[in-house]
Length: 120
Image 1 (tube, rainbow, N blue to C red):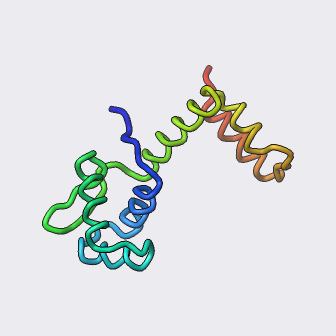
Image 2: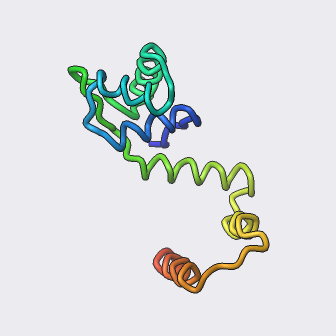
């Protein structure tokens, strides 16, 4: 199953749910009002949309996630690299770094990740 697309404002909303879940709809309205300056109706509209797409569920006015944050991030990252760099991870990293230098620790962490995911 492909990870559903999530838009910027939806992601901000989703981050609140992931941070506080399980969260009541009443509490979620308050959090969205405080953090996003949304009205109650906006919160319910976005919640309904994300529930319909299978990202969250709202049962008995308690909201929980059906898809974890990490899965959404992975899908969004892959779509971005595919769309912007033709799927080239080295092309993305080169553009991301530009003229910046990696610290020794960052280089070691990246090397360990590459070694962990290397085929063969």
